[in-house]
Image (cartoon, rainbow, N blue to C red; front, top):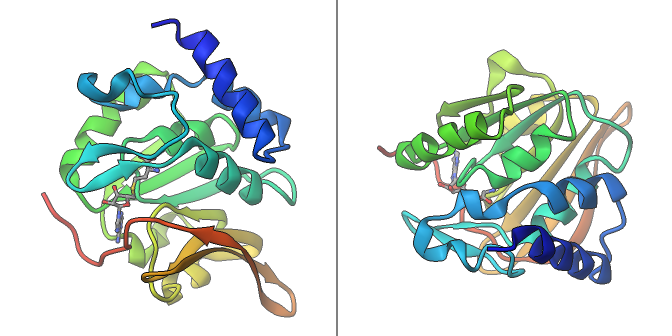
Length: 210
Ligand code: SAH
């Protein structure tokens, strides 16, 4: 697979769709998305679509990974970021190249077990993964100056807001059958919410699974 050329084409598509953050585009042009898929799916890695990773979950569409990352970084650099829903680990790998430290939690252990060696393979040493329920955040490691959720709750869990540092940003899809991407900023005057665009994510489910 000539993945460098296909990745460049993907980045061109992201630009056309309105992604402006050059850092984000640069990282996505060098991160090998095919490593995050099973062999049977790898040939489709640079299509701008969500792809199945098993357990009824999907690797997010590149556009949405780029958009959420751009929104997270919109106010300046982020030191420590919590990701909810590691999945394949692709978004985790993109974040790890743009922030100091990434903490990522996944409720399905089998997915986490596959994501872990990918971080090692890409020599991303600033990532900590944990098998746990992301609706509870990761209190020991917080507060976070960025939180990004790859799964949609009907309502934003209280714990995630509580673990947001002053000036912190939470990027999260919210809703059921219809969902909207939201950005919540913790400001001195309180939480300020911006509704960005309609999206479609897998649901944020409580509890964990093997
Ligand atoms: N960014 C990932 C997206 C995976 S899909 C990728 O591109 O591969 C969203 C993931 O969120 C799924 O793997 C799902 O199992 C996980 N998830 C859903 N509810 C969760 C919860 N409460 N805690 C942690 N992870 C959760």
